[in-house]
Image (cartoon, rainbow over all chains, first blue to last red; front, side, top):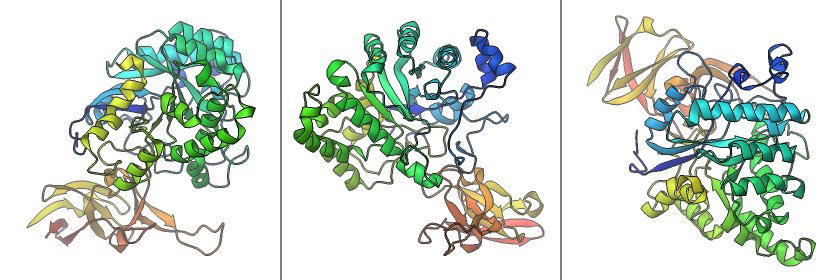
Length: 355
Length: 118
Ligand code: FES
């Protein structure tokens, strides 16, 4: 299977989900936080009325660890099934989304403790155990000062490449959250945004999972629009944003729409000093998964409309059910130069610590 | 060419087994009625190993919103990745798009042996 379609090309996979059990976090938590898990059975709040209705829930049915542990929980099995079999050069860990400290709707002190514990666990169990793996700093973003302290604490680690912000119901461009971006920029960390459980239906969830899953890109569009019009990239010129797991096919529309709106309504956001599409081209990148079975001409049109072939980076989303295969997800017979950019060079240019 | 792939008692109804025939990965499915069907083990979408999916049923098409008629238990092969459904009693046709189907292999049963041939 290795390299069948991408010709032994270097592969930087920009979305891999490792999974922690609360039990594994305990050694990294102090009291009183620990006892809220052991004695009081804290679990991450969930909001959606449905489950992920694939064969094995949120995971690929063949990704469960052979000894029965959940998918994504064992480095050895991930190496065998993903990193070795596809010949990954690097993989970026983007968290299991549970716990997702920045998604908590209260008790930010617990969220802050969980974020620190998660970062330490991630470093010990993954990043320092496989030279190919790079990671994301988890924070409790609802408390920007504490979040910035956590970025200061672990952000200079050479294997941490970005700060993870979930896409739920907070728009992160507001100046209240800018201490996070300031700390990230200082440590050469990019921002990675990945949806958790965004309420894509007027602040709630649509009736069916298929609707929610179809509309995830709208939650990504909210964040891109908000970050650009909040002037984040004018204020932090070194900061970049990776939009993870929303695909990229919404980008051509959004760039066109934002430019036209900016020409009409610039006066409302005078802190934005350039065309939105230029800001997006200079500061954003989009992971490819979940790809929409594009034909080559369709993909080339999208790239043409984005005005750059450097805005998309391949991602598998392993071990989740909507995984994209490096060999099969993109249309066949793409130019070698473009494949090199999508599979590795765009990610390498995006993350300074990979260079 | 022909090859004995498995014994009938190896696969209970509603179960699958992966095997190889003519140098290619295949999946032998035993339907709810006890009959055997053989297909490519590579999902036509992105190549997932179908044998790691599930033989289950599926709600049949209906004209009424909100109506779920779960039918064909054991006859619908669902892919382990994106969950596309293939009807093993209808030549592996995909439920969402019956123009697509799994490559099917011919087989016969004799003395408890499942033999594939072409
Ligand atoms: S690989 Fe089978 S449904 Fe996608």
